[in-house]
Amino acid sequence: MTDSRDIRIEDFNYELPEERIAFFPAEQRDHSKLLVYRNGSITDSRFDHLPDFIPEESLLVFNNSKVIHARLLVHNATGAAIEIFCLEPLYPTNDPATAFAQTGEVTWKCMVGNAKRWKHPLQITVPMGNKTVTVTATKGDNVESTFEVTFRWDDNGVSFAEWLEHYGKIPLPPYIKRAADENDELRYQTVYAKHDGSVAAPTAGLHFTDSVFEDLHRKGIDTDFVTLHVGAGTFKPVTSETIGEHYMHEEKIVITEALIEHLTQYIGKRCIAVGTTVARTLESLFIMGAKLRLNRPDPLKVSQWEIYDDEALRQVTAAESLQAILEHLHAQQTDLLRGATSLIILPTYQPRMVQGIITNFHQPQSTLLLLISAFVGNRWRDIYEHALQHEYRFLSYGDSNLYLP
Image (cartoon, rainbow, N blue to C red; front, side, top):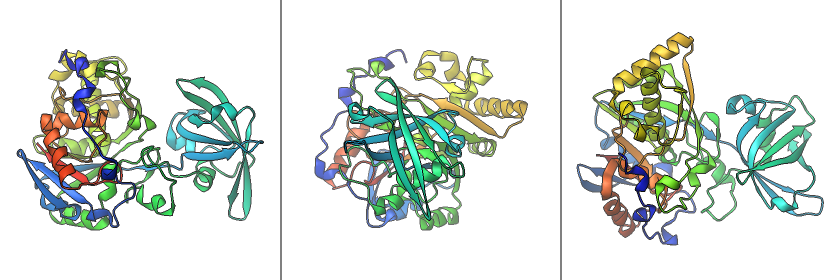
């Protein structure tokens, strides 16, 4: 696997006409198109027929992270518009759940539009029912094209999450060149979203409805959940010629002991990831367990390249990895595994935990397209060409794929 860094991103380019990009969701979630790739062949269907294509004794794993109102539009004293995009909490905690519950003051890493016009603290007036909360935003240090922004507000009975929910907007992807509307509040969120923290939706799950879940369970197909808070780095373009020069963003992971035990029941069967975030989470889980088994340092933090560089990690089995994690949780007397991952999944990667994936169509020359090639190889070109010729809709609000290699 020594040639992984030499993969050229231009080999993962394709022409995506603008008319193929979905700027609005389908009228009904589960009426989007579904492309099924199985045993080397392509089938066209509709998403509400998904249960017909899922093999029995499969486990579908979902990401239940919830998209926050991360985009704030504020005006300075002269009327200049300044956009603040909250990415991740820094102080007094970097744990999203705890940060959202903070009262009085928090500091977040933010992208800032029109930052040059932000010279003095900004005042944000937030109407909340029968009262108004005044928030002061102060721009701090510039770090890697982002800023540390401290928010202070005058009501200790109001949490950061509460005033952000009232004032902020849903952060649509940058290629959807329109303002978010009321419909996006509902549709850019999965029906099973639970834990606040993402600044981009885990879009593979946007197609699921209660009806689809009922049909899956009626067929005896199992479901479970992880929490991975999707960062803005998911839209970060690859600007280097080779992937070895690309820096992968880090994302936080929370996995329950119950899910890990659930996964052990599906070793040798089929685990299907609903979305690239779940695929990264489950494969990162394997690496964490392998590091625990081999006593590697910092086992709950997965770096971008370690699985490619460390032959011994790749020799650990999925069963051994999961058992090592369970032993670690028991030793720590906790039922939650909290970690972080910068894993990049490339065509040379061999998935250990995931035997299928449900996902949308991804941008040209993106790390997500590289991930897909780990499951379908070079056939991704045939799949995408078929989708373009058959008027599938692409990207976050677009149609769905089921890959069962």
